[in-house]
Image 1 (spheres, rainbow, N blue to C red):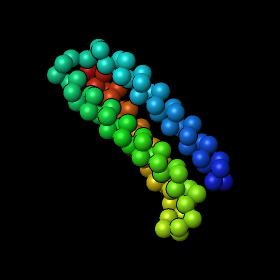
Image 2 (cartoon, rainbow, N blue to C red):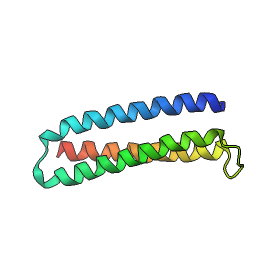
Image 3 (cartoon, helix red, strand yellow):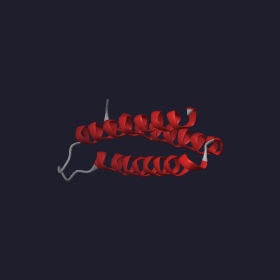
Length: 96
């Protein structure tokens, strides 16, 4: 995968994450007040991580050599895995 392919795929993945978060926000009206705060806190954490990953994509073209684009790709993929776990937790909250 080239840098450009990575940037395109990464932006697509982040758009998908944003859409999934929006869907979960819309479904939040079905949860009890007791768990609503936890639910919205988790969504906010996921949005922060999503923004951090978006900023990380910009580092692909960074020529400072502090980090390689392969490092960026690894960190991005780790962040995506973390977000997937967050989605699983939110879906679990909704199903209880």
